[in-house]
Length: 204
Image (cartoon, rainbow, N blue to C red):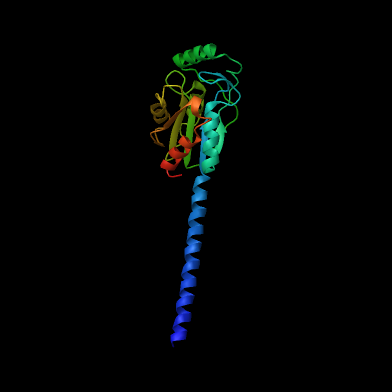
């Protein structure tokens, strides 16, 4: 009887261990599935930038790539060639005029946001908010982010988040917009850890 009881106990232990292992695997798969439903929407300006000079890859693009690498998010880059080759001073003067007039420059391509639960929105701060080309995207997708989590982020040289979070809330009133994240443009290449810490704090 004692030997039979031992066999039953061992069998039960193995069954429990197997179930726990399966449950852990299911949790892992669910987490991966959730992460795959994230996307980073961003605009990034290469070329002449304040504090970092003439760069081949824009500051915001680097942050977007960090997010993609860390959590496995998809990406959609808002691309316009309107600012290609412009020196810093003419660029900021043009950006100021666009903001003043509320212009909506065209961008290339588009993306279906219906499959995503979490949408990161990032860009540099130009005259107190995101570049106007991003507002073109916002207007086109104004009804596509209802019920989704929207996470704004910026690269800047002293403006922080500026009015970006408020402007995203206004553009997507049905979305759950978080408080946002900002990082200096001149530190994005050497401070990936800051992005990792931010994402960890969000639960990724």
